[in-house]
Amino acid sequence: MCHLLIMLTVSDWTAFFGRFHPLLVHLPIGFIILISIIEIFKMLGKLEVSNELIKIALLVTALSATLACVAGYFLSMEGGYNEEILIEHQWQGIWLAVFLWIAWLAKNEWLTQKIGINTIFYVPAIFLSCILMFVAGHHGGNLTHGETYLTDNTPPPFRSWLGMSDRLVNINKTDLPKIVNVNEALVYQEIIHPIFKQKCEQCHNASKKKGNLQMDEIELIKKGGKNGVIFKANHVEESEFINRILLPESDEHHMPPKGKNQITENELSLMKWWVEQGASFDKKVSQLTVNQTIKPILASLGGGINVIDNKNISTVKQDKFDLEEKILSIEVGIINEGVSEDIKKTKALILPIAQNNNYIEINYLNNSKLTDKEAVVVSNAPQQTLWLKLSNTQITDKTLVEIAKLKNLTRLHLEGTKISDNGLQQLKELKNLEYLNINGTSVTDEGLKVLGAMKWLKKVYVWKTKVTKAGIVQLKKECPNLVIESGINDQQMALLMQAKADTVNDDVYKKK
Image (cartoon, rainbow, N blue to C red):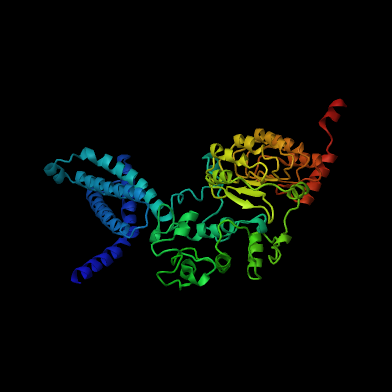
């Protein structure tokens, strides 16, 4: 009993002291930078500072770095961190402290005479301390906030230069991303997961697993943490993560912790609704019952788009396309089980288009790292695949060769991918394609010329591409019935068309 009490006390003290690691670690960071600046100015003859003062600063820096190492070790005992990054971070911190002690010893002449540390070690020790400070700090940020913490808010121009994908969710914002068609939105992937990403993944990710809970992958969310599963389908009151949110913010078990971005009332209502409706990870809004409380919240996610009354799911309000309606009226066999499994191995969702038929949607919302090599499986169900969503994946024009085999494809999402004008040539084979989204791609006016030949297209999205207003006007002339979503409204389009019509060609003046 006495032994147990001693162990408990030690555990309490280590946990207490470990929490001081973030506080202690900032002191050596500031001192290292200050000492480096002073030494540089001294070498340039711009500043005179006593060596005694620098010695004291180095001693304080080395002591605080050592204490930060000890506190960091105690903090790591709480668990929930990526072990590989944690070990690297620990050794970086230890070596940082070692080099600071070497710098301090090298600065003390009487110690160098006794111990034999030559002053030649001083400058390299300070230099290596600076390098380790930045590396250890970066890894510390990854452990605390996740591996993408440093790059999450990279501005758009730099993202494209560095080959980074478009930012889907800004974790510093409290609003959820707008959804083009709320009724067809996947409830978990497009509504619930963005909330988790903004408010939960900072502490529950691959690098930092507080309570052994990881929330950035579906299977790990289902698994739960050290206290078991965090939700129970159809039972809000028995879902632990909901109960944690409802605790007072001052409670140590309240989630997110005090000081972090808190869950809003609308977000809480959406999460409760998701659990009440079975906590499905692969259903759309149109497949669930939408009550009067949730309806306006869902509508706000779509920028005011009407949300259906789900008492009659067959009356889903959505874009209606003639060719698609014709295909849906034709019976098709069920997708082969082996083919289905091959597609799912690439982290794709296979979703039914509607009730009482075997047509499907293949959706890669869960796999932004999808490559051309993996994407070859998209053509394995050419009869059944009606919709294909490859948004924000790594595919290039090579995958469009496979997509061209999907003769029944009516809707295609390629936004945020690496396709080009050349790849769009492949889409001419898709004689039933009526909806195309190429937002955020490198497509130019040359690509629009290809689309101009596809008279069967009904709707196309070209936001944030390299197309020009002139190219859009020309496409509209060739396809008057095509709805072009480009950020230009109908009135602006009419003015552009009129301006184009009133323009006198330069050749007229040349002839004169």
